[in-house]
Image 1 (tube, rainbow, N blue to C red):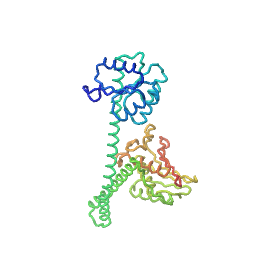
Image 2: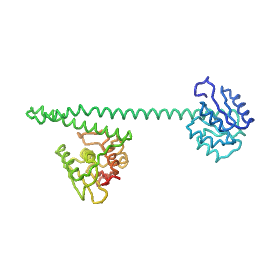
Image 3: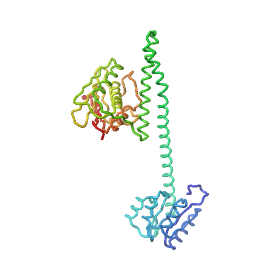
Image 4: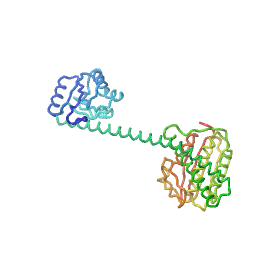
Amino acid sequence: MNPDGPDAPLRLLLIDDDELDRMAVRRLLRQLGTPAELTEATDGLKAADLLLAHPFDCVLMDVHMPAIDGLALLRHLRGMGVDCPVVMLTGQGDEALAVDLMKAGASDYLSKSSLDASRLGAALRGALSQAQAQRAARDAQRLLQQQVQFAEMFVGIASHDLRNPLGVILLNATLLERHGGLPPELASCVARIHTNGQRALRLIRDLLDFTQARLGTGLPLHRVEADLHAVLADAVDELRSTHPGRQIELRLHGPGTGVWDPDRLAQVVANLVGNALRHGAPDRPVTLTLAGSIDDEVCLQVHNQGEPIPPALQGELFRPLRRGEPAARPGAEGGIGLGLFIVEQIAVAHGGRVGVHSTVDDGTTFSVWLPRQPR
């Protein structure tokens, strides 16, 4: 019965102002034959001091006591962080009181009038087993949180340190491309180095953003007065250069001025349009639309035709490391499931929101609503 081992005595605290009731509990404990070190207190205030100063395996507490009753004492102890299991004893059966005691953190509730050794032993065993299971669950949760935090910190540190050597690789690949005069087979090798280096750089950036978002610091923004029309046009030009065989349409409506982080919003476009190119029908255009007719808000939408996203998966799309979209086309570049999560984090950092609509007839549209001014 003892969590410290079968041979260790059970450390019990009995709180009751009635000497006859305490004698009855001592007699029942002797009948159980369980080794126990019994400490007694006659009022709740002395018991609280004992519990804060000494470890106990279980508490047997009377409900009706002078100075402070059992329910108030139990709430006080739980508020102080004392998680020792408590079995409540009462001379009067009261169903409503029993409910309040269990809500306050009691492990069990026994009537003194029908108390015997078997019932007391069962209550002690249940309280100790419950406390042991709760401690094990807390320890497991604490360990899991430590492991998750370590993993996220490791990802952040590793991603940050990888950017420098990768930057050197990309710089030298760019210099070789500009030099020219390379044999065709070497020129294609350099082009592949540059293309895959850029992809690796995007993955590292996503991992860094993911780590910042998960560790609670949030994505950093550098807001300036900017015109989204120019930001989107530059982003689309870059995407067209890296996807020469695909059609990307840009539609701009209303004013695009506001206070934003242009680099972050270009990242939103790259992630959403890249996602649409990867999963959309290859013979249909991907459309990027900015609707800015509302005075204090703009809406950025990316639309593609193709296999729709199942409704059951649409709620999962913006969660990290989730790839709920239909399988990408054969040969399409895969991701690690962070692109849409980062899109939402950037929108939220701007005070905005995201949404998705996907059906067979309408195709798939991702929407990002952004306020023009910081909120």
